[in-house]
Length: 107
Image 1 (tube, rainbow, N blue to C red):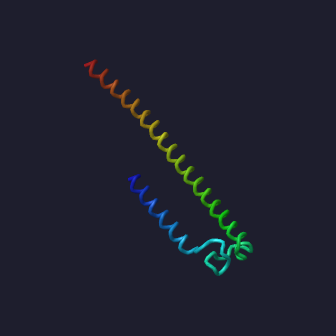
Image 2: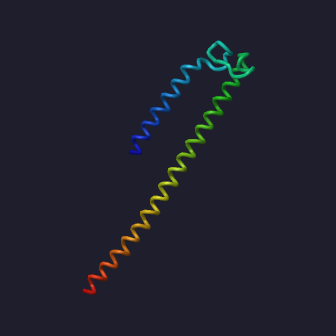
Image 3: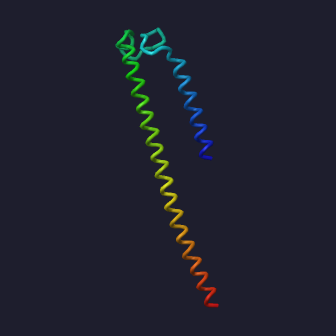
């Protein structure tokens, strides 16, 4: 199940990246040239527009990396929680098995 979700997420992410890159054209080329609007610097195009576009791309990649790291951390915490719960339940099972053995021994 987790593998299927991971594959679906990767496919979705790849599709989104392809769609956004197809719509953007060449970033930083100025308004009406595929770079789109996005502020006076980007609309002017040229070197400053390209630099601004590169900085924005870097920012969003960093944010995506942070979000993925947080998601991985969340899942690791969930795994740790469930492992502890399994250990607790195994101790409970052992306790009940001991009670059954004692009852069998008393007969």
